[in-house]
Amino acid sequence: GASSSRKVRPVASHDPKKAKFEIVVGEPEYVGEAITGHYVYPIRVVNLQKDDLESEVHRRFSDIDSLHSQLVAKFPGYIIPPIPEKSTLSKLSPSVEFLRSRREGMQMFLMKIYTHPILGSCEEVEKFITLPNSAYNAYKTDIESQKASGWMSYFSSVSKQVSNSLITAISPNAAPRPKNDVDRVFDDYNDYFCHLDAQLQKLNTQSKVMLSRLEAENAAFMNMSILCHSLAKSEENEVEDCYNKGSKVFETLAKNSLDQMEKERDQFDIQIRDIINDVSAIREAVTRRCTTLRDLEMDERDLTELRNQLAIRESSLTSSGLTLDEQEGRVLSSQKKLESMSRTIKEEIENFQASKDARLSRLMGGYLALQKSYAKEKYKICESCR
Image 1 (cartoon, one colour):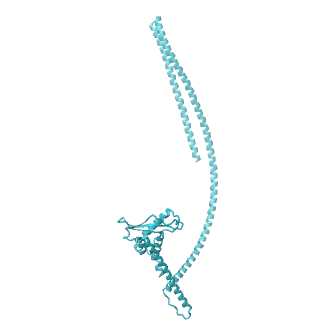
Image 2 (cartoon, rainbow, N blue to C red):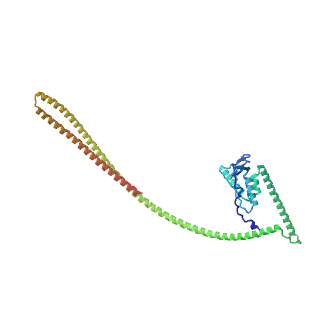
Image 3 (cartoon, rainbow, N blue to C red):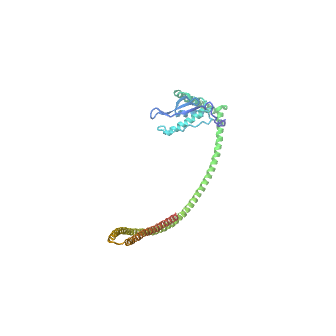
């Protein structure tokens, strides 16, 4: 009889009539003094089809807790949804996150209870949703008084039965008392607890066996951990030795590479200085040639003056009575001299320009080749260091 009442009934599907309703738990409001006050949550039942408010009440968290206890006591075989956990520390200064979590948990609990086809139609849920605050407080007080009176009557009846049984057992001529309902329930519970004691003894024996196995496994695990620790330590020493050897080899290679790079840098600096000296020499040569060109320009100015002097001399010769052929011969010879001097000047300028361009091209090509080779060597050294 006791085992059949402990079977858990499956949770039924939601009531289709209440599927159009929704329970909304609003933001809590603090009521009362700073220390003795409490939070009150507005609970609204909203009709989703009409988009209208059916009812609105204000309940404390203790009311939710009381409703949960009533449902657990009234429906022992049903799975009652849980409510948010209680928190004694959060009564004085609850955080915003705590209040939000509690409000969401209350709303989920009420929605599941209200839409359940059996739990939602019971008297406790209907009064919790519909009764005003004052009426619901009176209803709670009445339930608590009934619960207290029920316990008192139960204890008085049990005490009477115990006293009667003791009187009957003490009297020597008393006939055996027939068993009543309480005795039968007691026998059922006695059989149940005896059976439970036997199962617990078996469970204790199995637990001892399991504990011994766990101790053996723990010892084996400890031995394995010691072995793994020793292996790890030896491997760590080997790895450290390899690391030290590798570090030394790497330091040697890096030092050699740095020395090689310094030598190549010194050679490159020498080559750069040679190029700079060559450029300085070219600049000096260009300066000298420019001086030569300036001298040639002065020679051209001298030729112009000679031409002017020849013109003056021709005029003087004409006035002196020279023949025309003699004058033309002198003019032609002067022109030939001027043309030869002009050609010489042009050739000198072209030769100087060509030699200057060739020398500069050779120097720049050598400089770029040296820079390229230096970059390649540097890349190879960096790759070897890696």
